[in-house]
Length: 113
Image 1 (cartoon, rainbow, N blue to C red):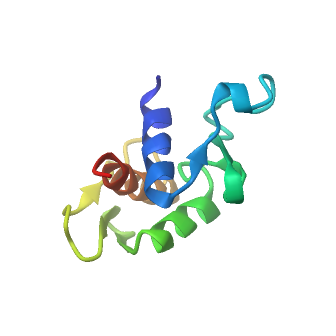
Image 2: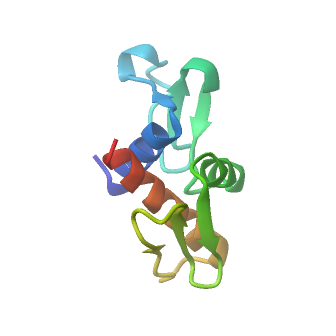
């Protein structure tokens, strides 16, 4: 499993979204891809990819009550139970780095559930 897929699965868990299992999904159209993300089922059925989608990242940050520092970029939950999760920009643009910081803290919340 890729590191990004694991981050997305944990972030989906934190957000209360159910990731579709391979047997629930169309084997051709609904598999994980880095571009589309994960296919979720249930009340919020659809693609979930806050690593690439600004809307998914913002909804995730709002759902989890995250404080975001776009300058660093970093994010942390409120109240501050986990500390700041930074994202090195590396080759990422600012928006991509902020989305990754949001997903990193969401994944840590999902891991602790």
